[in-house]
Length: 117
Image 1 (cartoon, rainbow, N blue to C red):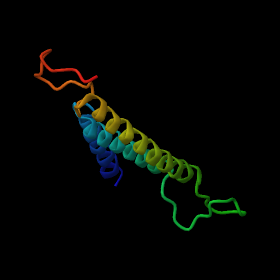
Image 2: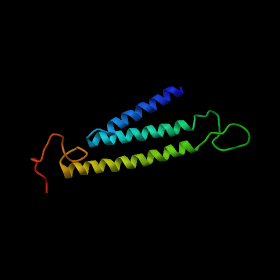
Image 3: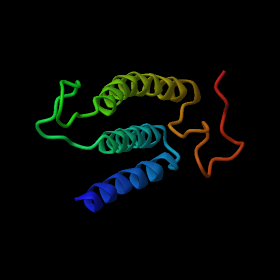
Image 4: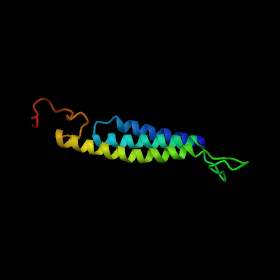
């Protein structure tokens, strides 16, 4: 089971990096989102999954660690806010530059393109 979880996190990370290295704003946003999901899964998996264990010490017995769940929940909320902000930046860049490319220039288009004022 550990191999399956580790390979799944690895594949999500690889797909996120591949999308992040693309030249379009939308794929960069998707790549950042997938990387965030991979990090969340990694943090969640590092805390292990406990059965019949209290999250607070109540005498003898096994105790689950509540910190990874709290970190992942916080990361999900921050990830939503960051994704919304990055999407707004991408939309603004497309409006200002007239292109969805991350550097504002389409590949193969030379200096003959008119600049917008």
